[in-house]
Image (cartoon, rainbow, N blue to C red; front, side, top):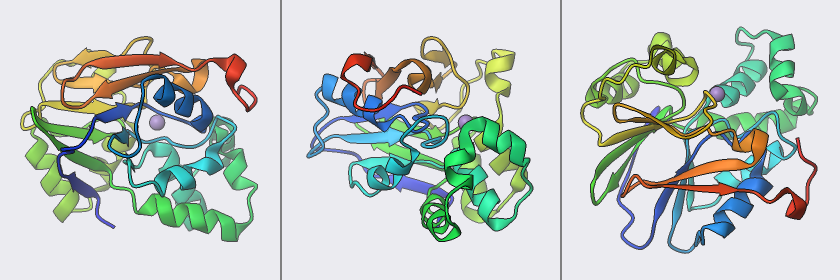
Length: 239
Ligand SMILES: [Mn+2]
């Protein structure tokens, strides 16, 4: 697998990004329908944390098999990898964070998920007509996109990985420094009430997994489309 992925521009349709999904794929599907998402021409980019907390984590495999769906690896995907491969992991914390569906699954099935999660890059860049858009789960340790790209491609620095998947520092500090070399960097991981911009870094996890309120961002225009799933139409139980 490559820890960094480049994606060419979409000349046919729209590119949208979404914050953490956390096993709420039916809600996300409702939101996509509400904004007229067309799987034939549009693409959806996820900033990671596809699984845990919600009732439909298993559905991530179907989504990841769709040619229009692209995701980076969040810390929850990393937790599953650590669990299976014997990395350092606080099991009580993992279960409390929603990992029970995975922990209680037969090992052969866990391996199928982990194999797929290990293929996900830690960061991705997408070409658009108005410039390059970066995506990763939590934060970048470098304010030069080129430096992050080089680090992920040519080193395997655990500190860089840690920041990319776990850090909440930029939001905590209200750090509005611009990340040079990308028009915008889209991240998730820390829930915010409304999508929040600091410098050119957009925090998109508006808790769609908790409240049904997903913020979809158009990559080319950086316009936000907020969509809230209608729970009364949801086929699954609310989580
Ligand atoms: Mn996260």
